[in-house]
Length: 148
Image (cartoon, rainbow, N blue to C red; front, side):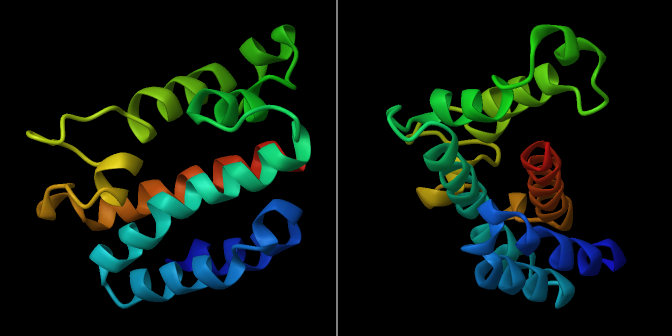
């Protein structure tokens, strides 16, 4: 929780976060109130919104979909840097594709992803403190990429 205060100051300074600052502040507020259902419900779709803001800047003529959103973040890093960079871009790419944007079966959803949250089928017990922290960590990782 103490880290969130610093993030709230730093994130709006990144152009791609500024349009999302009010909504992210509400997620922080809900997290600090131990309302993890609301925090996660705000964070997971908004992470994609931040990625879209960056994509529009970085690749305005490229169609927006899950793969191109992820590529917009990772592709600018040259292949030599990708394997030595402390931000672990290849692992982050894999996480975004396989976990954050994970596909789901609407008849039998499981786990927490952007899709299960946004489509209203995430298991209720998945809206935990840990899930909210993961959302904030994704945003912080994005913030570090956008700074570069």
